Image (cartoon, rainbow, N blue to C red; front, side, top):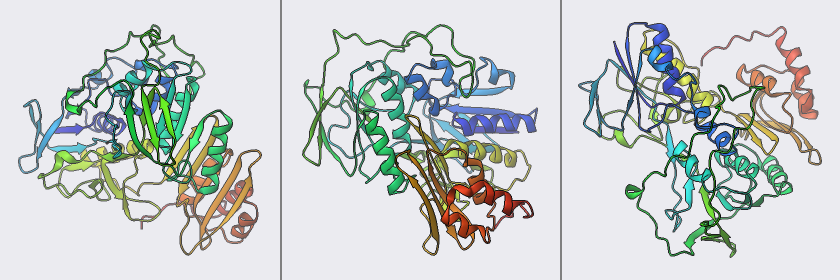
Length: 468
C-alpha cells in the first residue's frame, strides 16, 4: 500500500506517524515544498526572540526520526494530481503513484492590496525563511510596523516586542483579534498593549508603502532566499513547556554601520505617515488549493471533506488548514486554520486511510493567545447566536473578563481574558453540550462560578458525545 502525503506540517507528520503505527509494512512518502526539516510555524516566534535555534522549530527533534520510521521525505512542489490514474506530478518532473493520498498543504499568507507591499523590508512572518529574514534585521529600537492584529499578528507582536523594537500595530478592525474577541475583550487587549509601550491603531488602513531609498518592488519570482545565519551552539532538545528552556546565544546580528534607518514611509488612511525600518504583514491566510484546478477534487474555501475527512474522490483525503469540513458548533462547512485542528485532522485522516473507519466529530473553534503576558481564550460560538443570551463579568482594572454565550440552557460559546483557571471547564461544558438547568441563571449573574456549575451539572449527566 502506497500512501502519499502532500504537506510536511503537523497534519502531514502526525498522519504519517499514525499510518506507520497502523501498518508496519506500507510505503509512506511526505512531500514538502520547503528546503527544511518538517517544522512548526507556531515555533517561529520563539526563534525570533532567541529562545530556540532553528532546530528548536523542528516538529521532531531526533535527526533520523523519519528514517527510523521508514517515512520518506521528498522535497518538491506538487504541480498536478491525476485522480484517474492516482498519480502525483511535481514541478521538477518527478511522478509518484499512490493508493491513498492526503492533501495537507496548509495555507499561505494573504497579500493585502496595498501599493508597495512587495518592497524590500516588507515581510510576511509565515515560513522559517521569513523568520531568518526578519531576525537578521531586528535590533533594539528598530522601528517596525505590524500590519494586522489578528491571531497570527498578535503572536508575532509579542515576539517583536520582546526583542525591544519600536513597534506600531495597524488593524483594520475596530478591535484587536476581531475574529476571536468581542469588542470589550479586544479593546482591553489594545489597552494592555499600549500600556506595554506598543502603539496600536485600530479601525485604520494602510493606504500605501513608499521607499525612501529608491528601492523598487522585487517580483516574487525573482526573489532569492537570504543566506542562512550561523547555527548557534547547544540547541535545546525540547522547547515547549520545558522547565529547562533557556535562551540560546544570539543567532543573528545586525551590522549597524550598514543599517539604513527608516527606509519606508507608511501612509495611513487617517492622514498619518509613519517612518519605519520594516513592515511585517500578518493580514490573514488562504488555503493552498490552486494546484488542484482541473483535478476534479471539489474546492470551496478549502477542500471539501466528509465525516471521515475524505474528499469527493475515493482514496483522497484532506487535513489541516486546507480542509473545509464540519464545524462542531454550527454543523456548517468551514476552515479552522489552527494547529490543534490540523493535528486531529492528521490523526483521523490517517486512521481512515489505513482502513480503520473513524468518524470526525467536527472542528471545535478554540483559540488560546498570549499577548505580552495577557492570556485570552475563545471557544465555540463566542460571538453568540441570534436566539441566545449571555452573561458577563468585567474587571478592567485587573484585565479580567468572562463572557458566556447560551442557547436555551446550553453554553455554546465563551470568551475570557486574564483568567485561565476555567479553560478546561469551558471546553467541557461547550463540547459536551451540557444542559445547565437552573445553573444557567446563576452563571448569567456570576460567570465566575463556572467550576461549581460544571461539577453540579456533570456529576449525574451522561457526558458521552453523540454525533448529529
